[in-house]
Amino acid sequence: MISESKKKKISESTIRRLSLYYRVLSILEKENYETVSSKELAKREKLTPAQVRKDLSFFGSFGTRGLGYPVSELKKQIAEILGLNRGWNVALIGVGNIGSALVGYKEFQRQGFNIKLIFDNDQRKIGSNHKGIIVSDIKNLEKDLKDNSIEIVVVAVPATVAQYIVDDVIRAGIKGILNFASVNLKVPDDVFLRNENMSMELEYLSFALSNLRNGTGDD
Amino acid sequence: MISESKKKKISESTIRRLSLYYRVLSILEKENYETVSSKELAKREKLTPAQVRKDLSFFGSFGTRGLGYPVSELKKQIAEILGLNRGWNVALIGVGNIGSALVGYKEFQRQGFNIKLIFDNDQRKIGSNHKGIIVSDIKNLEKDLKDNSIEIVVVAVPATVAQYIVDDVIRAGIKGILNFASVNLKVPDDVFLRNENMSMELEYLSFALSNLRNGTGDD
DNA sequence: TAGAATTTGTGAATAGATTCACATGCTGAT
DNA sequence: ATCAGCATGTGAATCTATTCACAAATTCTA
Image (tube, each protein chain N blue to C red):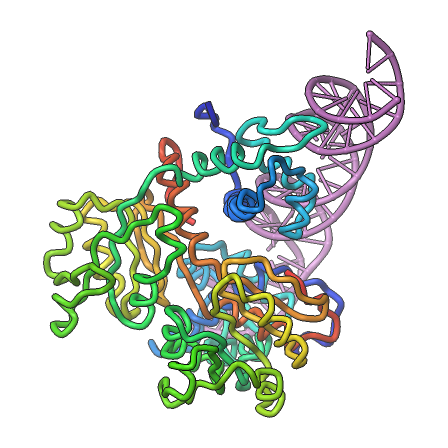
């Protein structure tokens, strides 16, 4: 049993690194590695071995001293920790630029995030077919989300309307929202909201390049 | 004068928050605010006032005691710090799902990131027009990047080929790379590499929802 | 012009995350 | 079997980031 409901607070950075480990383990699995050491894992993600071991130790003891971690098993464990050992019913709202890209984004499906519904308010888009999914009218958003047991909603609509839509989404009882709109959304305390701000990384590059008298370059 | 080449190390989180402040200041400017307090700024980004003041203090004293910060002026200052007070010549490599979305992503242009060149290796795409830009053959990548004074490259190609392409990009002397491919790229120390991993935030949601006996929901 | 009300800017204190360092335990060779 | 060699797991130490708390500066009101 993993994490017996301990109240230990897991930091956001640890979770983000678990995602990284998961990806590397998938690769190692394909490369037919049986085991991997924290040292090797760390090297591949430019972290320290201690960091890797500490992160994993929050959830249990998965390794063998003298040998390392069993690749497939550890991958499975991390999948369980991250909740990737099951599928998630996802709805996408907004089939503009970004929305359309997300429909075809293989990485999502691979991780078990299945886009089941797509919504838009544009009459020309409603009814059209995106990778096998018919775009629904956003008018019935609340009911459709409920009827299809949607658990996670991805918001890819213009910033101006994002809050109204999110309010609807919350009324439908959704507890997980991934927001691509460039705006700060208000959600109740029991709803998990994550923002994907694509300009932010570019701005970081801009800062780094503007100040490169000293910088080391790497992240 | 801002930041007189001080060796003070600015943390990544501070820079990311500057991006947030910048966005809020743009909104405040539109709403015709003359000044804004650290308290208000903090509220809008769900941070503490002390955090806001400390972040800004790394770069100078922009506020007036008893009054707050002048909105337009502070926005200008942050733009300077982040290097957004100038344009950046950007090239996009790969016009698949994500690449196409990025070409039309308004937010980039608004911040001064101008996509000047687009590359692909698919003969059917080469020569085609995306928002006024003709897709170039990736064969001439190195030369084209140099000839067009490209400063930042956005990589949106399959994971399997990303490293080869990045090697080329580096040979062209590019020092800033934004990578959307789901792979860990190796770059020299003097090249700034940032990764945009869109699954990561979904995985965080997955983790949060899977463990929601306790979580508070917010980030 | 004086005094109350604000709000910044910043050292000091606290909280949090990372790294160190080593005892512990497993492996594999002889 | 024993022993050298590894590599984990984890308290303790260190480093980093955030928050506190208050003096100093300015505004606003009367």
